[in-house]
Length: 382
Ligand SMILES: *[C@@H]1O[C@H](CO)[C@@H](O)[C@H](O)[C@H]1NC(C)=O
Ligand SMILES: *[C@@H]1O[C@H](CO)[C@@H](O)[C@H](O)[C@H]1NC(C)=O
Ligand SMILES: *[C@@H]1O[C@H](CO)[C@@H](O)[C@H](O)[C@H]1NC(C)=O
Ligand SMILES: *[C@@H]1O[C@H](CO)[C@@H](O)[C@H](O)[C@H]1NC(C)=O
Ligand SMILES: *[C@@H]1O[C@H](CO)[C@@H](O)[C@H](O)[C@H]1NC(C)=O
Image (cartoon, rainbow, N blue to C red; front, side, top):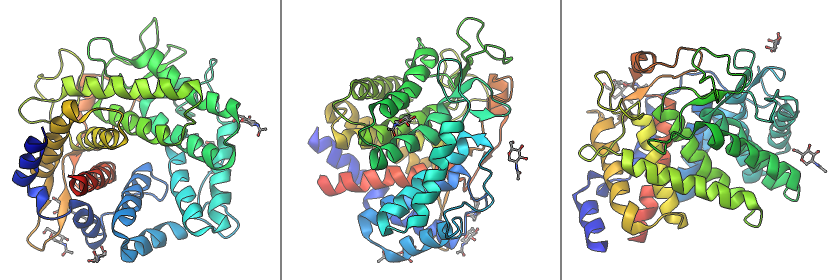
């Protein structure tokens, strides 16, 4: 197995240069950022820079990241142009980056900004059984896989830093994952459908459990990453930890079955009977998140090298071979990311596959940086 891994590495273009620093440099040079300030995609790209800095200690990268985030937070901790009575889980993701800067440099305004987002969670509307609505208005009583990544990881990180002994908080946190698992786990594939409506009134809601109909790969990607992130901070002695770990392992295994045996990637819609339908295609953001989730789980010992080492290496090569464009000027572009996917739709195959595929998308670039970070650590170990 060791030999096999090594030969795959040698054959890989990734052996030549770190795509982590290359893509991070390219993103700055090509000025890829053109989305609103609190957009969760930017938060995800910044997480990639956190990873790059932790590995290389390149102050230029860190300074760039700081310059991007510093203006978002006023000296009193208020967040510029941020509506604190607009309850949308997507907007909470940036709280993780505020916590990073608070921990990194100890500047109080970042903690105050994170506290403001944490306070919004206390006011955020919930379903009758305690799940955070994806958004108020529009997505009343709905929980999406995406929201777990956007808000509940932040809830967990904030609690680990400032309220770690509060068992009530930890139980409230794991409840969000439990609720998602209870309804959205898709029997035939072991993957998860996009979300559910506890009131069962959405046009797409299953009349019995409220589940949406299809497995949309990006939502599963956010969710897979959320499991890695929450396991890093969830107290191991509490019951919830073992459940989270089992959710991770079950999903890791199901992704193995869903990985295409030739391309080594994943189609946009992964529901049984849909994978080979006309219009379905290999999408890049979820592929990066699945690759990251496997590599991160391997390094942490959640899954074993024998089963996952080779599929993960092949998935990483798929990212490089199929989604990274090298320009003549030496910069890279990340390609092939689906722009959005929303349950503000009929959630049909035609809806999801009709959304444009775009280059330079934060929601692909960020996960690719993270996958490349894990890849570099793996190269160092071998
Ligand atoms: C640090 O990052 C900058 C900006 O991306 C890049 O130009 C430079 O080559 C990097 N330095 C090192 C030593 O990697
Ligand atoms: C590099 O080339 C690409 C493709 O032509 C272009 O879009 C990009 O702006 C260039 N970047 C720089 C820094 O010149
Ligand atoms: C976005 O992608 C296109 C197509 O690959 C590329 O030409 C362009 O340089 C990219 N722009 C940025 C800002 O990276
Ligand atoms: C903030 O969001 C709430 C809820 O959507 C809305 O009623 C209010 O007008 C918004 N405030 C501003 C200043 O946009
Ligand atoms: C513990 O956490 C819960 C849920 O987040 C919160 O409502 C409660 O105020 C916290 N208790 C203390 C003592 O801070």
